[in-house]
Length: 106
Length: 331
Image 1 (cartoon, rainbow over the protein chains, first blue to last red):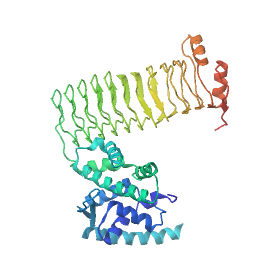
Image 2 (image 1 turned 120 degrees about the vertical axis):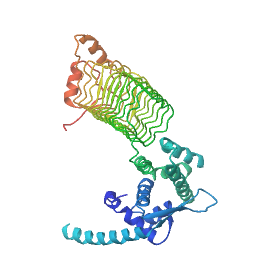
Image 3 (image 1 turned 90 degrees about the horizontal axis):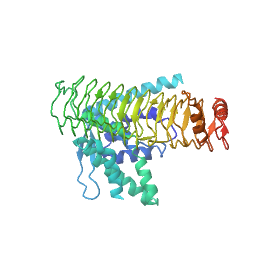
Image 4 (image 1 turned 180 degrees about the vertical axis):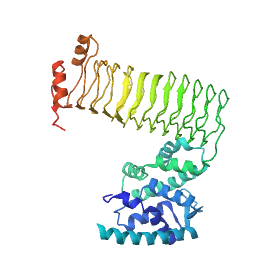
């Protein structure tokens, strides 16, 4: 990881909501998409991933259900809720605003 | 390999086994890691490299677990606060909140206080053998004349805590926050302090046979008048640490860093500082038995050590053996 990960970590809830807005996913699937979409430049570790997922679940922005895999371990899928979609669109607006302001300042 | 992954997770999750949502996370994590491992193997990686990389992908999970453990318990579960002389043997008190609780002379054998908030509580003369305080908040708690043998304080917050005249043998303090904590006249035989936070922690008249300290930055810690001989320190740094009047005879402190450390009047026979870094370290003998101290200084090993000029001059004046020592530049 060669970029400042703290900056990114502050937006990880939004990143995860955005990925779940495209369809339900399980934990490792999310981390794979994050690393492939950033061409491996950012990798999320399990600790960061799950602390975000559990936080979002507590805040009712996402829900979860167990899949019915037969081989390997069971997988838990996460699904964005209506509340989660609202949070996501608000966060996107906030980000656009912050991006505009920050780029004017630094 | 599945078993190896499983046992690694068992280890990480061991303090939280009773909580359902943590159990579920363990299952999720296991299938994630298994998939990652299989993918790395499919990409041509050998077993041990793939395993290591898989394990590394977990990151700092302790805090996440703590957060999740806290989520599962209502925070407002306040208990009565006076439990003095109660029999709470094997009780499940995980996640309870009992500020300034009194557990004096209580039977707490194997009781479970996992993640509990016990700020300011008193455990005088209690029997807390085998009790589980993992992840608990024990800020300013007092254990006096109590028996806490085999107790688990893993990841607990023990800021400003006092342990006095107690038995804390085999205590597990791994990852615990021991800032401003005081251990006075205590038996810490076999206790473990892996990755604990030791800032201004005081150890006075403590028995530490087989106690383990690893990966710790000890800052302004006092280890005074204690028998440290059979304790082990690995990958630690010592800043402002005071070993006054303690016995360190025969210890290996190899490769570790000592800044502003005082060994005044300490027993130092055959201590090895091989490849260690020493800056502003004081070896003064406070007694008038200076000859004994001089003799002990000659048995110290500084092979390959890096020492600042001042400390070097001091050691030289004591006739320490300083062949193969490198002088440190100024800070």
